[in-house]
Amino acid sequence: MIVKLLLTTLLILASICGFFPAIALAQTTPVELKISLGTSQGELKFVPNNLQLKAGTKYKLILDNPSPTKHYFTAKDFADASWTQKVEAGKVEIKGAIHELELKPTGQAEWFITPMKAGSYKLSCSIPGHAEAGMMGEIVVSNS
Image (tube, rainbow, N blue to C red; front, side, top):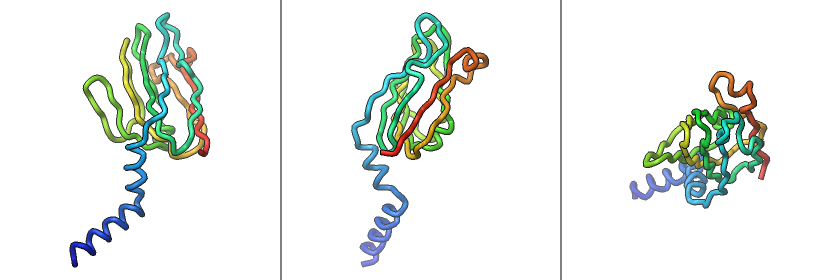
C-alpha cells in the first residue's frame, strides 16, 4: 500500500514538473537543419544566417565547418530559452546546458535542441573580429 502511494505521488510530481513532455520530446523524430560555419573559401558567415524555428518542435542542427579556421556557434539566449537533449560530435555525446560550440576546420557536430520560448535571438561567432566581419545571424522562434 505504501509503495503504491509513493509511486502515485512520484507520477503526479513528475507530470507537474514537466518530466513526461521531456521524455516525449526525446523520442520525437527531429527536423534536420544544416548550418555551415564559414565557407570553404574562408568567408566569415553562417550559411544560412537566418533560422526560422517553431517553439516546441525538436530540431537536429547539423553544424559543419568547411572553412580553414575554427569558428564558434554562439547563441546563449537561444540556448537558455531551449531544451537541449544532447550534442553529438564524433564518438562523444554531451548533455547538459550548452551555450556555444567550437568547430575546428572540417569539424562537425549535431545539436538536438527544442526551442521552448518564442523570440528573436542573436547568433554569432565569438572569435574576435569574426562577428564584425559579418559572421552573425538571427534565430527566430515562433509559437507553434
